[in-house]
Image (tube, rainbow, N blue to C red; front, side, top):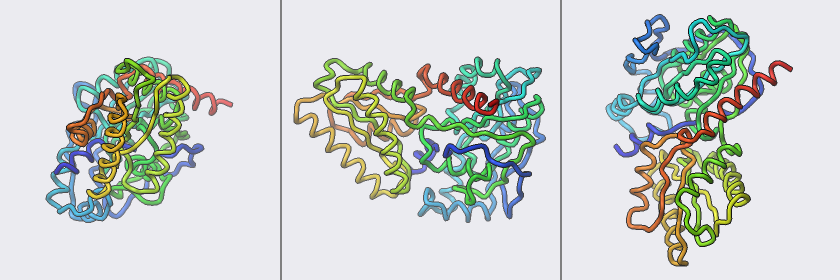
Length: 357
């Protein structure tokens, strides 16, 4: 079940202009819809709800590329390993404001979610802010609850911020579907959300200069002699080949940032396509290993960093892929750098400024 573990790290919204809103739409089959569940002692709503698997949902998921070749039992096991889908308000209950921020995130585990929430305090002091956490494969209730929390705080325009490293992935498409920005779901055909407020959508961090600065800082932490070192920026990578090409183009912009601000011998980008079919993943690994070996043969040190948000799952997969080779690896995720929260704050501020003009 190695592949099922990598799905836990998949994460992925195409930036557009504000979308026209409509009431939430019911579909032929859905996940759980429990928007009246009381919050727990930490204020998290739906946090302890279990994934609901109907035969219809299993049938739909089995047709998705990420679950290709899986049995129903394997899909159930994978979904059981997923973290919860829940809502966690960040702002004080009595804070009111015309503008609000809905932060979408796939989840970083119990501790990581709490750290992210605490880091959002500066944003949450300026305008109502709510986290909607989870992979959204079989439910959208946590997102609808986040919208409702902001509406109850007087919000007339909600800035939706996708906390993902790239727009080219499956979760991005699922979120787009949930907000009726895409006709087809990437996972389950869950209920689409609606709001009385206007929704605006921020860009994911993608190739933002703040992301480039983070990756450069992480490379520099391991660097001793830059002009004799090669930096390889590794991404998780989407399943689809065309998406992967687009993802590499975005990552190349990150490489250009590093080249312009440091004197490394070379800077490259690649992806693992870690949820793709086995033969595709194997090819990506062989290419990466060859690149590291070639640098070593030239007497150069290799520094590997990623553009991943968190530090779980894929980093372990990367280490296995490069077993026996000589390289340095900074396993930190983007969210561990101060720039990441700065990017969220900037995204919200820019969207609000645009809405106010």
